[in-house]
Image (tube, helix red, strand yellow):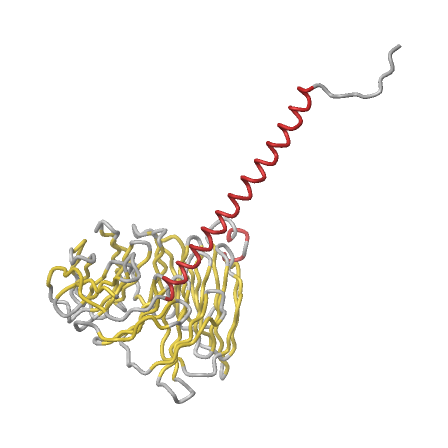
Length: 394
Protein backbone atom coordinates (compact mmCIF):
# COMPACT_ATOMS: atom_id res chain seq x y z
CA UNK A 1 0.00 0.00 0.00
CA UNK A 2 1.38 3.36 -0.98
CA UNK A 3 2.41 5.68 1.83
CA UNK A 4 0.61 8.99 1.91
CA UNK A 5 3.04 11.63 3.04
CA UNK A 6 1.10 14.82 2.06
CA UNK A 7 -2.49 15.69 1.39
CA UNK A 8 -3.16 18.54 -1.00
CA UNK A 9 -6.70 19.76 -1.44
CA UNK A 10 -8.05 19.81 -4.93
CA UNK A 11 -7.57 23.13 -6.68
CA UNK A 12 -11.29 23.67 -6.95
CA UNK A 13 -11.77 23.52 -3.13
CA UNK A 14 -9.02 26.08 -2.55
CA UNK A 15 -10.59 28.40 -5.09
CA UNK A 16 -13.98 28.11 -3.45
CA UNK A 17 -12.52 28.79 -0.02
CA UNK A 18 -10.67 31.91 -1.20
CA UNK A 19 -13.75 33.12 -3.10
CA UNK A 20 -15.84 32.99 0.11
CA UNK A 21 -13.22 34.99 2.01
CA UNK A 22 -13.17 37.58 -0.73
CA UNK A 23 -16.95 37.95 -0.52
CA UNK A 24 -16.76 38.55 3.23
CA UNK A 25 -13.97 41.10 2.78
CA UNK A 26 -15.90 42.86 0.03
CA UNK A 27 -19.09 43.04 2.08
CA UNK A 28 -17.19 44.35 5.12
CA UNK A 29 -15.41 46.95 3.00
CA UNK A 30 -18.70 48.03 1.42
CA UNK A 31 -20.35 48.32 4.84
CA UNK A 32 -17.47 50.48 6.10
CA UNK A 33 -17.72 52.75 3.07
CA UNK A 34 -21.49 53.09 3.50
CA UNK A 35 -21.08 53.85 7.22
CA UNK A 36 -18.46 56.50 6.49
CA UNK A 37 -20.67 58.04 3.80
CA UNK A 38 -23.67 58.12 6.18
CA UNK A 39 -21.56 59.74 8.90
CA UNK A 40 -20.24 62.34 6.47
CA UNK A 41 -23.75 63.17 5.19
CA UNK A 42 -25.12 63.34 8.76
CA UNK A 43 -22.27 65.65 9.79
CA UNK A 44 -22.89 67.91 6.81
CA UNK A 45 -26.63 68.02 7.59
CA UNK A 46 -25.93 68.94 11.23
CA UNK A 47 -23.48 71.66 10.18
CA UNK A 48 -25.88 73.11 7.61
CA UNK A 49 -28.79 72.92 10.05
CA UNK A 50 -26.82 74.74 12.73
CA UNK A 51 -25.66 77.35 10.23
CA UNK A 52 -29.24 77.86 9.07
CA UNK A 53 -30.53 77.94 12.63
CA UNK A 54 -27.92 80.46 13.74
CA UNK A 55 -27.94 82.52 10.55
CA UNK A 56 -28.30 86.22 11.23
CA UNK A 57 -30.18 88.72 9.09
CA UNK A 58 -28.96 92.24 8.33
CA UNK A 59 -32.08 93.72 6.75
CA UNK A 60 -35.63 93.23 5.53
CA UNK A 61 -37.33 94.13 2.28
CA UNK A 62 -40.83 93.92 0.84
CA UNK A 63 -41.42 90.94 -1.45
CA UNK A 64 -44.84 90.21 -2.89
CA UNK A 65 -47.65 92.65 -2.16
CA UNK A 66 -51.20 91.37 -1.86
CA UNK A 67 -54.49 93.04 -2.58
CA UNK A 68 -55.17 96.24 -0.72
CA UNK A 69 -57.90 96.25 1.90
CA UNK A 70 -59.08 98.23 4.88
CA UNK A 71 -57.36 96.30 7.67
CA UNK A 72 -56.46 98.70 10.46
CA UNK A 73 -59.68 98.43 12.52
CA UNK A 74 -59.63 94.64 12.90
CA UNK A 75 -58.17 92.03 15.20
CA UNK A 76 -56.08 89.12 13.97
CA UNK A 77 -55.36 85.47 14.60
CA UNK A 78 -52.39 84.12 12.66
CA UNK A 79 -51.95 80.52 11.61
CA UNK A 80 -48.83 79.62 9.56
CA UNK A 81 -49.42 81.38 6.28
CA UNK A 82 -53.04 82.24 6.92
CA UNK A 83 -54.48 85.34 8.57
CA UNK A 84 -57.82 85.29 10.35
CA UNK A 85 -59.24 88.82 10.42
CA UNK A 86 -62.18 89.55 12.67
CA UNK A 87 -64.18 92.41 14.13
CA UNK A 88 -67.62 93.05 15.62
CA UNK A 89 -69.13 92.73 12.15
CA UNK A 90 -67.54 89.64 10.65
CA UNK A 91 -64.63 87.27 10.19
CA UNK A 92 -62.54 86.21 7.17
CA UNK A 93 -59.56 84.05 6.25
CA UNK A 94 -56.87 85.38 3.90
CA UNK A 95 -53.81 83.74 2.39
CA UNK A 96 -50.39 85.33 1.93
CA UNK A 97 -51.31 86.89 -1.42
CA UNK A 98 -54.27 88.77 0.04
CA UNK A 99 -56.79 86.37 -1.48
CA UNK A 100 -59.88 85.96 0.71
CA UNK A 101 -60.46 82.24 1.26
CA UNK A 102 -63.79 82.71 3.00
CA UNK A 103 -65.72 85.28 5.01
CA UNK A 104 -68.75 85.44 7.25
CA UNK A 105 -70.73 88.40 8.58
CA UNK A 106 -72.35 88.71 12.01
CA UNK A 107 -73.08 91.23 14.75
CA UNK A 108 -71.13 90.66 17.99
CA UNK A 109 -70.08 92.90 20.84
CA UNK A 110 -67.05 90.96 22.07
CA UNK A 111 -66.05 88.19 19.64
CA UNK A 112 -63.90 85.28 20.87
CA UNK A 113 -61.99 83.38 18.17
CA UNK A 114 -60.09 80.06 18.36
CA UNK A 115 -58.49 77.94 15.65
CA UNK A 116 -57.33 74.32 15.35
CA UNK A 117 -56.38 72.14 12.40
CA UNK A 118 -57.91 74.42 9.76
CA UNK A 119 -61.12 74.95 11.74
CA UNK A 120 -61.97 78.45 12.98
CA UNK A 121 -64.67 79.10 15.58
CA UNK A 122 -66.11 82.41 16.73
CA UNK A 123 -68.70 83.38 19.31
CA UNK A 124 -69.80 86.44 21.24
CA UNK A 125 -68.85 86.52 24.91
CA UNK A 126 -72.09 85.97 26.82
CA UNK A 127 -73.82 84.89 23.60
CA UNK A 128 -75.09 81.37 22.98
CA UNK A 129 -74.13 80.66 19.34
CA UNK A 130 -70.74 79.35 18.18
CA UNK A 131 -70.04 79.54 14.45
CA UNK A 132 -67.46 77.08 13.07
CA UNK A 133 -65.92 77.48 9.60
CA UNK A 134 -63.75 74.81 7.98
CA UNK A 135 -60.89 75.41 5.54
CA UNK A 136 -63.21 75.44 2.53
CA UNK A 137 -65.53 78.03 4.07
CA UNK A 138 -68.34 75.66 5.06
CA UNK A 139 -70.22 76.99 8.09
CA UNK A 140 -71.56 75.10 11.10
CA UNK A 141 -73.60 76.41 14.02
CA UNK A 142 -73.66 75.27 17.64
CA UNK A 143 -76.46 76.62 19.85
CA UNK A 144 -75.55 76.16 23.52
CA UNK A 145 -78.77 77.78 24.84
CA UNK A 146 -76.72 79.31 27.68
CA UNK A 147 -74.32 82.26 27.97
CA UNK A 148 -70.80 81.36 26.79
CA UNK A 149 -67.79 82.29 28.93
CA UNK A 150 -65.07 80.57 26.88
CA UNK A 151 -64.53 77.61 24.58
CA UNK A 152 -61.90 75.46 22.87
CA UNK A 153 -61.92 73.68 19.52
CA UNK A 154 -59.94 70.65 18.36
CA UNK A 155 -58.92 69.44 14.91
CA UNK A 156 -61.13 66.38 15.56
CA UNK A 157 -64.16 68.69 15.04
CA UNK A 158 -65.22 68.93 18.66
CA UNK A 159 -65.89 72.04 20.73
CA UNK A 160 -65.72 72.30 24.53
CA UNK A 161 -67.63 75.21 26.03
CA UNK A 162 -67.77 76.84 29.47
CA UNK A 163 -71.36 77.95 30.07
CA UNK A 164 -73.11 79.69 32.91
CA UNK A 165 -76.72 79.90 34.01
CA UNK A 166 -78.31 81.42 37.10
CA UNK A 167 -77.22 78.81 39.61
CA UNK A 168 -74.54 76.65 38.01
CA UNK A 169 -71.76 76.48 35.49
CA UNK A 170 -71.41 73.82 32.82
CA UNK A 171 -68.64 72.37 30.72
CA UNK A 172 -70.23 70.84 27.64
CA UNK A 173 -68.72 69.04 24.67
CA UNK A 174 -70.27 69.31 21.18
CA UNK A 175 -69.48 68.15 17.68
CA UNK A 176 -69.43 70.87 15.02
CA UNK A 177 -72.93 69.89 13.89
CA UNK A 178 -74.24 71.07 17.27
CA UNK A 179 -74.84 67.67 18.87
CA UNK A 180 -74.17 67.66 22.60
CA UNK A 181 -71.76 64.82 23.43
CA UNK A 182 -70.97 65.49 27.10
CA UNK A 183 -72.48 67.64 29.85
CA UNK A 184 -70.58 68.32 33.09
CA UNK A 185 -72.24 70.28 35.88
CA UNK A 186 -69.79 72.47 37.77
CA UNK A 187 -70.60 73.81 41.23
CA UNK A 188 -68.41 75.73 43.66
CA UNK A 189 -69.02 73.14 46.39
CA UNK A 190 -68.08 70.13 44.25
CA UNK A 191 -65.77 70.96 41.34
CA UNK A 192 -65.21 74.68 41.58
CA UNK A 193 -65.78 77.34 38.92
CA UNK A 194 -64.38 76.50 35.45
CA UNK A 195 -61.85 79.10 34.28
CA UNK A 196 -60.27 77.48 31.21
CA UNK A 197 -60.81 74.51 28.92
CA UNK A 198 -58.64 72.78 26.30
CA UNK A 199 -59.13 69.86 23.89
CA UNK A 200 -57.04 67.28 22.07
CA UNK A 201 -58.32 64.10 20.45
CA UNK A 202 -60.41 62.33 23.13
CA UNK A 203 -59.04 64.27 26.13
CA UNK A 204 -60.48 67.46 27.62
CA UNK A 205 -58.69 69.50 30.28
CA UNK A 206 -60.47 71.94 32.59
CA UNK A 207 -59.05 74.40 35.11
CA UNK A 208 -61.36 74.87 38.09
CA UNK A 209 -61.18 77.60 40.76
CA UNK A 210 -62.50 76.82 44.21
CA UNK A 211 -63.12 79.07 47.24
CA UNK A 212 -63.99 77.81 50.73
CA UNK A 213 -64.13 80.58 53.29
CA UNK A 214 -60.71 82.22 53.35
CA UNK A 215 -59.06 79.41 51.42
CA UNK A 216 -58.78 79.13 47.69
CA UNK A 217 -57.33 76.52 45.38
CA UNK A 218 -57.33 75.49 41.76
CA UNK A 219 -57.45 72.09 40.17
CA UNK A 220 -56.49 70.98 36.67
CA UNK A 221 -58.63 67.99 35.71
CA UNK A 222 -58.37 65.80 32.62
CA UNK A 223 -61.29 63.85 31.19
CA UNK A 224 -60.99 61.04 28.65
CA UNK A 225 -64.10 60.35 26.57
CA UNK A 226 -62.59 57.34 24.81
CA UNK A 227 -62.06 53.79 25.96
CA UNK A 228 -59.80 54.64 28.93
CA UNK A 229 -62.28 57.12 30.38
CA UNK A 230 -65.13 54.62 30.31
CA UNK A 231 -63.49 52.75 33.18
CA UNK A 232 -62.99 55.78 35.47
CA UNK A 233 -65.52 57.72 37.58
CA UNK A 234 -66.95 60.68 35.62
CA UNK A 235 -64.37 59.98 32.88
CA UNK A 236 -61.69 61.68 35.02
CA UNK A 237 -58.28 60.15 34.30
CA UNK A 238 -56.08 62.58 36.26
CA UNK A 239 -56.46 65.67 38.44
CA UNK A 240 -54.04 67.96 40.29
CA UNK A 241 -54.76 70.48 43.06
CA UNK A 242 -52.86 73.73 43.63
CA UNK A 243 -53.37 75.64 46.87
CA UNK A 244 -53.59 79.43 46.81
CA UNK A 245 -53.44 79.55 43.02
CA UNK A 246 -55.56 80.79 40.13
CA UNK A 247 -55.02 79.01 36.80
CA UNK A 248 -56.64 80.98 33.94
CA UNK A 249 -54.67 79.40 31.07
CA UNK A 250 -54.64 75.74 30.03
CA UNK A 251 -53.44 74.72 26.55
CA UNK A 252 -52.69 71.54 24.62
CA UNK A 253 -49.52 72.33 22.64
CA UNK A 254 -49.95 69.11 20.66
CA UNK A 255 -51.64 65.75 21.23
CA UNK A 256 -49.10 64.78 23.91
CA UNK A 257 -48.16 67.95 25.81
CA UNK A 258 -50.19 70.38 27.89
CA UNK A 259 -49.21 73.41 29.92
CA UNK A 260 -51.07 75.47 32.50
CA UNK A 261 -50.19 78.92 33.75
CA UNK A 262 -51.21 80.18 37.16
CA UNK A 263 -50.62 83.48 38.87
CA UNK A 264 -47.53 82.08 40.56
CA UNK A 265 -46.62 78.82 38.84
CA UNK A 266 -46.10 77.10 35.49
CA UNK A 267 -47.20 73.48 35.14
CA UNK A 268 -46.60 70.87 32.44
CA UNK A 269 -48.32 67.56 31.70
CA UNK A 270 -47.71 64.80 29.16
CA UNK A 271 -49.82 61.95 27.82
CA UNK A 272 -52.22 61.60 24.89
CA UNK A 273 -54.73 59.49 26.84
CA UNK A 274 -53.99 60.26 30.47
CA UNK A 275 -51.97 63.44 31.00
CA UNK A 276 -49.69 63.28 34.05
CA UNK A 277 -47.72 66.06 35.70
CA UNK A 278 -44.15 66.32 34.41
CA UNK A 279 -43.00 69.69 35.77
CA UNK A 280 -44.20 72.31 38.23
CA UNK A 281 -42.28 75.58 38.49
CA UNK A 282 -42.99 78.19 41.15
CA UNK A 283 -42.75 81.71 39.74
CA UNK A 284 -41.72 84.49 42.10
CA UNK A 285 -41.82 87.31 39.51
CA UNK A 286 -44.80 89.08 37.94
CA UNK A 287 -45.83 87.56 34.61
CA UNK A 288 -46.58 90.21 32.00
CA UNK A 289 -47.66 87.82 29.25
CA UNK A 290 -47.55 84.26 27.97
CA UNK A 291 -46.98 83.17 24.38
CA UNK A 292 -46.70 79.68 22.97
CA UNK A 293 -46.12 77.62 19.84
CA UNK A 294 -45.90 73.90 19.08
CA UNK A 295 -42.84 73.18 21.22
CA UNK A 296 -42.00 76.33 23.20
CA UNK A 297 -43.64 78.59 25.75
CA UNK A 298 -42.46 82.14 26.30
CA UNK A 299 -43.11 84.13 29.48
CA UNK A 300 -42.54 87.87 29.53
CA UNK A 301 -41.30 89.34 32.82
CA UNK A 302 -39.51 92.50 33.89
CA UNK A 303 -35.72 92.24 33.74
CA UNK A 304 -34.68 92.17 37.38
CA UNK A 305 -31.03 93.00 36.61
CA UNK A 306 -31.94 96.57 35.73
CA UNK A 307 -29.91 96.39 32.51
CA UNK A 308 -32.98 95.96 30.28
CA UNK A 309 -36.73 96.49 30.50
CA UNK A 310 -38.06 93.00 29.72
CA UNK A 311 -36.96 89.39 29.88
CA UNK A 312 -38.33 86.54 27.80
CA UNK A 313 -37.99 83.13 29.46
CA UNK A 314 -38.30 80.31 26.92
CA UNK A 315 -39.49 76.91 28.18
CA UNK A 316 -39.57 73.62 26.33
CA UNK A 317 -42.78 71.58 26.35
CA UNK A 318 -41.23 69.30 29.00
CA UNK A 319 -41.05 72.22 31.43
CA UNK A 320 -37.32 72.81 31.19
CA UNK A 321 -36.16 76.43 31.01
CA UNK A 322 -34.35 76.59 27.68
CA UNK A 323 -33.00 80.14 27.63
CA UNK A 324 -33.67 83.76 28.54
CA UNK A 325 -33.44 86.88 26.41
CA UNK A 326 -33.41 90.44 27.77
CA UNK A 327 -34.55 93.38 25.65
CA UNK A 328 -35.90 96.94 25.84
CA UNK A 329 -38.27 97.24 22.90
CA UNK A 330 -41.93 97.81 23.77
CA UNK A 331 -43.77 95.12 21.83
CA UNK A 332 -47.22 94.62 20.36
CA UNK A 333 -47.11 90.84 20.04
CA UNK A 334 -44.82 87.82 20.21
CA UNK A 335 -45.06 85.02 17.66
CA UNK A 336 -43.60 81.55 18.31
CA UNK A 337 -43.74 79.44 15.15
CA UNK A 338 -41.44 77.33 12.95
CA UNK A 339 -38.74 77.20 15.65
CA UNK A 340 -38.44 80.98 15.61
CA UNK A 341 -39.56 83.70 17.99
CA UNK A 342 -40.62 87.13 16.73
CA UNK A 343 -40.97 90.06 19.10
CA UNK A 344 -42.44 93.02 17.26
CA UNK A 345 -44.37 96.26 17.28
CA UNK A 346 -45.57 98.35 14.34
CA UNK A 347 -42.09 99.61 13.46
CA UNK A 348 -39.48 97.23 14.88
CA UNK A 349 -38.81 93.51 15.12
CA UNK A 350 -36.52 91.10 16.94
CA UNK A 351 -36.09 87.56 15.63
CA UNK A 352 -34.68 84.79 17.84
CA UNK A 353 -34.08 81.15 17.09
CA UNK A 354 -35.65 78.53 19.34
CA UNK A 355 -32.61 78.69 21.66
CA UNK A 356 -33.12 82.40 22.26
CA UNK A 357 -30.18 83.54 20.10
CA UNK A 358 -30.75 86.83 18.31
CA UNK A 359 -30.92 86.60 14.50
CA UNK A 360 -32.24 90.06 13.70
CA UNK A 361 -33.01 93.34 15.42
CA UNK A 362 -34.15 96.22 13.24
CA UNK A 363 -37.00 98.11 11.62
CA UNK A 364 -39.74 97.13 9.19
CA UNK A 365 -39.96 98.89 5.82
CA UNK A 366 -43.63 99.62 6.58
CA UNK A 367 -45.84 99.78 9.65
CA UNK A 368 -47.06 96.31 10.71
CA UNK A 369 -50.33 95.31 12.34
CA UNK A 370 -49.55 91.58 12.60
CA UNK A 371 -47.17 88.90 11.31
CA UNK A 372 -47.36 85.21 10.51
CA UNK A 373 -44.78 82.72 9.32
CA UNK A 374 -44.46 80.90 6.00
CA UNK A 375 -42.70 77.66 5.06
CA UNK A 376 -39.46 79.65 4.82
CA UNK A 377 -37.90 81.08 7.96
CA UNK A 378 -36.74 84.05 5.90
CA UNK A 379 -40.20 85.06 4.71
CA UNK A 380 -43.10 86.38 6.78
CA UNK A 381 -46.55 87.55 5.83
CA UNK A 382 -47.23 91.02 7.21
CA UNK A 383 -50.52 92.86 7.55
CA UNK A 384 -49.94 96.58 7.07
CA UNK A 385 -52.48 99.36 7.22
CA UNK A 386 -53.74 98.85 3.67
CA UNK A 387 -52.23 95.62 2.30
CA UNK A 388 -50.96 92.13 2.95
CA UNK A 389 -47.28 91.87 2.09
CA UNK A 390 -44.39 89.43 2.21
CA UNK A 391 -41.35 90.55 4.18
CA UNK A 392 -38.08 88.91 3.24
CA UNK A 393 -35.21 88.93 5.73
CA UNK A 394 -31.70 88.91 4.28
